[in-house]
Image 1 (cartoon, rainbow, N blue to C red):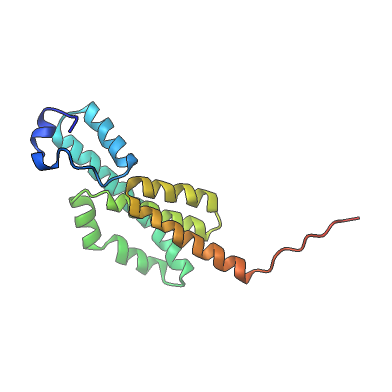
Image 2 (cartoon, rainbow, N blue to C red):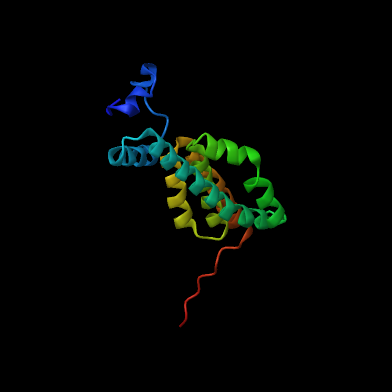
Length: 160
């Protein structure tokens, strides 16, 4: 609603005062690109780049998650990344959900390797793309809790 020119002309007036369901990351990114160019086609391509980044993050995460689940990482990666639905919906529709999912999968994969701090930051980025991305913190907390129940507490001994 704050932009003018060709960008606003392409938007139905019904949506002008509707709050965005997206978090601050895609809004800031879209605002930056809109300030650099008022060309709707460049904006469309810029948002599709975010979807491609999401698919790259998914492709990085899936083999790690599959290995943790004792599933063939190559097969899992092919089934997920080469899935026509992911490609056509993710890139074709340029939804922010793909970036959110890529960040969420990455956060979970990082958590499974014990990099909890990095996983928390990436999970926060997923939530900053779209709020449901923050639900990955449950998936991050579950293995941490499970691991704490399985491993005995370390003995604290002092050396005389």
